[in-house]
Length: 133
Image 1: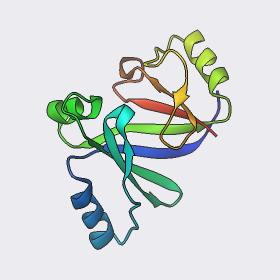
Image 2: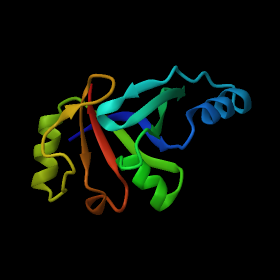
Image 3: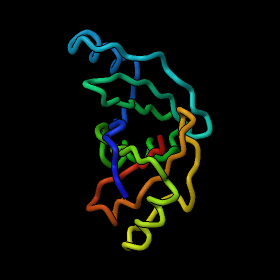
Image 4: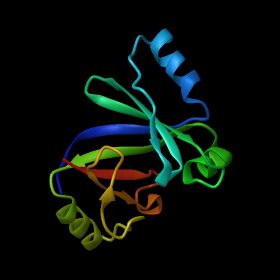
């Protein structure tokens, strides 16, 4: 498996408006409009620095995965996403190497690309997302 680049870093937050203000006012970055992702119980916004996106994840339901993450660990870095050219091949190679997956098969991400998450217990505590581009 070859990683092409870091696609984005996911950051769990409680308030997208406050995050947008900080990143635009303090850091001079343009933050996207919010995207509603009801199937994931999230609202999402993006900004970009040197070709790497920051994906801000705000839960819309206290039972969502991100809400539970914030309850347990507080706001902060949730995951890192690597871009790969062939997600099926990457999954096969990772399984052969004993890496466990959160998702059994790829699903569509909020931007319409195929994604899969790796089990953090297999990746030294880091939640890794692979995204096919």
